Length: 393
Image (cartoon, rainbow, N blue to C red; front, side):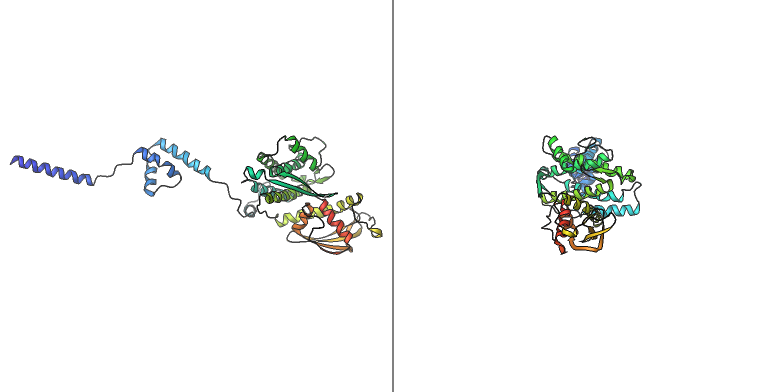
């Protein structure tokens, strides 16, 4: 009987052991399993249960915690910069909203805003370029005394051109000049050819850094020394006040940004209307001098008895220039003397152009004959004005 009791007790204990085994907690995942999940955890690709197990393990395992931190940092580096498909006006709107709430301690002068905006827009276009885009062919165009001219280069060559010519402004401000010419700066075209020649090798994407740093230095310097707007900037054969020179450089930056965008088949918007208006105003102010220069070179249309010199400050023969669009306006351009005053009473012709079309004519991208202009009055005077606009390139 005692043996029967022992056997019964043994069976009961075995049954209890089996029952206890069915309700015991599952063992914790092994260290190698959790370590193998760290990559998926860093990419947020784990299930909720796996995430909880990994994070519980990280609190107790310093080695895995260090590895997890490094993986998370690597994932952050894999994220691409903002796409170029963003609204090109987004940066301007954000900055305007920020400046409304808190003006900068050292604001950028009004006359330097267009240069700041256009260099930033071009830099945004360049940021996603690969090697093939940097070596895409670009044809620079301008209008000279002999008519339309052009020069073949690459996207990198265009940025090198901007770097070389912007160096005139940098030198006037006491900043480093990429050409280090000394006291007698050469004209823009000669500076560009010299920079390309001295580089020994065709420019590459590495030119972007020096160009962008130079533009930042120029904007930073004029912001700290806002009274420098009348400082003279020599262009070799002539001189412009700094405030006009920066508008001119903003204009060329936009024009060449369009050249680059065309080369890589990417859309590019014109400048903001207020900046476009400043560029047009500068071109109109330079027209009387350009007309006089063409007349001295024998390139102006014969005026017969109607042409005569006008004393400084006196009204003379004029062309009404109407620029349509958000950046436009109306101006009376004196024809016969750069010191004369435009006069409605002495108006001999009327020319109408779209604002962007006028700028493309001033950039030498459209010939005077191709300019889509509404015209009325003296055809010789109209031809002189349109040719003078193109000669500004």
